[in-house]
Image (cartoon, rainbow over all chains, first blue to last red; front, side, top):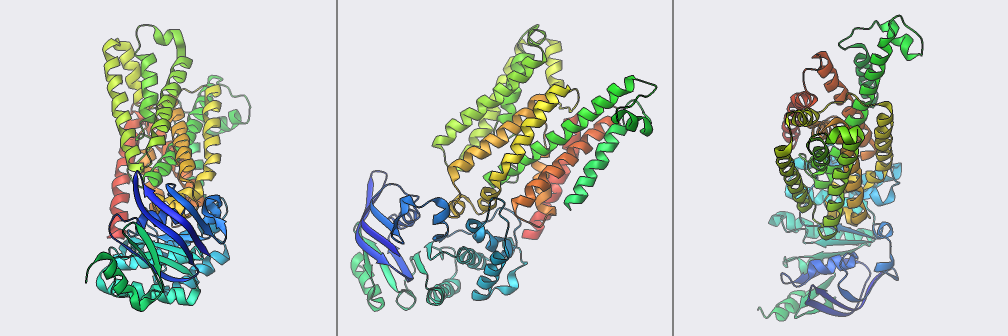
Length: 235
Length: 326
């Protein structure tokens, strides 16, 4: 599904990291690295929004730079740290925005679009929120809706850039468990950058670690914490 | 809801034909509109002028409100409007160059000169913005630069006043108060044609605007081309604001108030619904404002009336929307 070959990513004149080869199919993959190590840049590279890289990023066998924006929106969805909406949208309105890539010029919502929204609300157990105003939700609830919006977009790949940054401990725990459940139930590939390591061995299937200008992939969950601590020299 | 808005426009339109300094019987208005003859022939000129004025009000109101909603969503700011990008001020500057440019400039270039200069002024600011926007990707930064363009051009206009005599100053100040009056049929067709074109092509902004409420990063991930969207936004709002400003003066408040009212009234968040709603409400509000101007015997300036109606609407909707949020 997602394939990266001989990647070298830089920002401005600064080189961020290299990556030899990576193939990812499904599951929750944690993206770990220090501030400024290039986690967000990596996510933007996968989205085809960061041009300063060498190598090839392939999605379903096709180079990311050759996929049109409209097609890409059907393959990759995103969740950022800060949920924000301009306007007095209801939860259903926000979720429906995920259907945009599947809609025509006039954004007319089809029965299938509403069906998808209902399906995701059931999956996230937020059926009762439909009519609620998005703005009155707590940060945790808002982020849950934004994850729902990404799921409604119905893409095989979901990228998350520190989705838990503004969440409290309980919400972080629940988010972590939820992502694992979604990946298991839907077979999606979820790449999620995070600084929170307490659930990483139980809830993640893979680890992408950026350390010393190298990105490495590990797939033995029981070794994750040890690997991270060794890489950064903290014990 | 849309039907209600359309009937409001029809009613206001009828009232605008009916009311004025000269009272003309309803039956005679119908006779004149259907091409017949009435005993007082000068009435046909009055009706034609009232008709033109109402059509100008409808299109100007719709254009300003549409510019407003596009800019508010693009900048994610409920206070954004056609005035903020400096395009209105650019048009004002062009008009000022001709009107304040020295003795006899207006009579030499005539009305056409004022219009061409206004459009040139607006288009110059527009191109400057497009140029700057090549290097600036942040919407807020672009907004600030637009505001600065506005302040700068206003300052240049103030400087121009130094060379103007009393009559020129008076003419420019009156233009600045705004009015839907006095457009000849040829000008009216040009203005309405351009606005109509902008309205139709704004269909290409429906999806980008729907996505942009989430912010530009999310919009991009939904397949929206941010670069193309930026140019579409500047072109649409710039052209519409320029054409209205040149012909009717810098009209305030309609562009800011209407989009907020639409957001409050209409529950659908799809701009396929919100844009038509904005057009209708903008047209209705402009007609209402002009009706009040006319009932006052043309003594109240249009901008005074739009402020009197617009400012309370903005205050009301902001309080109301915040109540829903908090």
